[in-house]
Image (cartoon, rainbow, N blue to C red; front, side, top):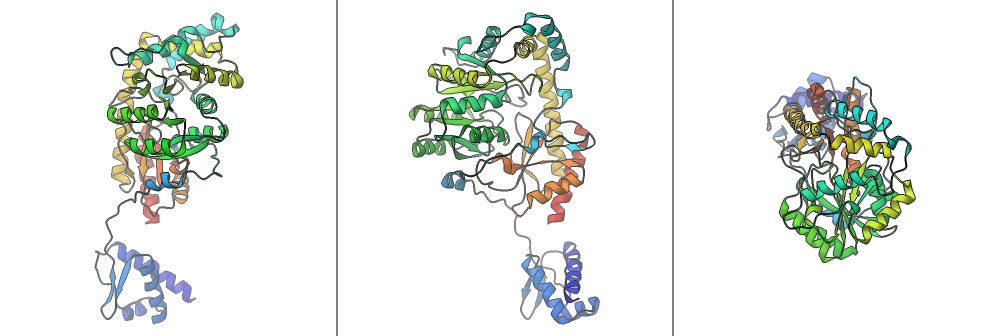
Length: 469
């Protein structure tokens, strides 16, 4: 009975404290005894519970007062990522971002753009033409259709500085999507049991590909502007790693877009150590406020292996990616790719090539940039209004996602469950870390369906945070 009374007093005082100013004096013990019909011992027990929760402070001989709230500042423990390395036993599961939810759920968790943002008319017409052509009954070359190889090479060459030697069509290997490309590159360029540098946090699919390839993951701390080049250099020197997986343009999940100086310094570190940078240019076509300038465009010596997928910009049904590598690395990658899938469907390659060579493709990309900007800004504004404790680490200049930092004390699993109960699906940030998470995060997709539900989603996040507070 005493425990019930104590809990009732705690609940009542928490409500009183919520409306009181910092430093306000709580009612005296005698007044609380009279109000709740409890003994002085029970009242003191309730006050000790509130003190343990950091809500009040006792001043002997004076009274009990509402504790002034400290300035909330997320702690930065990212340096420990490099010091500790990756736990060997961690095997990631398939991401929550692939979870299918009912149509009436506000879906902020997914990793793909809404159907309304895709060039559906171009894709349907391309499939119709491919079905009537020879691609429907032919086996393509192992490295890909020559015209599609040439398109990937020309796209990368267009970003090269004046005087630089552009890649040729023969440097390109067409693969069935970027996930296959990552697994292939990790096996061919690193190998089981050998170290691979990975940004932390980074794309969950890269973490999964690394685990399945058997490489030894070496996490390098990275933030909203990218990794510290000196940390990358130290990691190469300390581990003898032969490759660094990175996303210089609109990284998933952080949205980081590398500055030119940072890109040059990372490339210089790879050259010094005779290593590769495996560049995942997944969001090349998803720019908003800045263009994606591939790191590979500034490299002529074969240190950068460039992977560009069309799955998110053309259609999830068109799983086609181009991997550009120079020298023997390209031959090893092709051999590893053939061992896994022999070749990519000629129909899918023909569809991809058809779409990206139509004049309307460029028009679509210009419209896509405007739509992504509007949706991004709408979700950022909704969070700032309804969930101000959910801090957007940096407003991304492209891509599909916001990387949201939550207060240090948040129970992330409970918050995700609370949001789900309110009809809002969010992706917990834990699965984007190759080692232990450095804090509680959410990855929220602003390119998903129903942007009109962003305010509802933000309110659900804010209410979940308030319940924990």
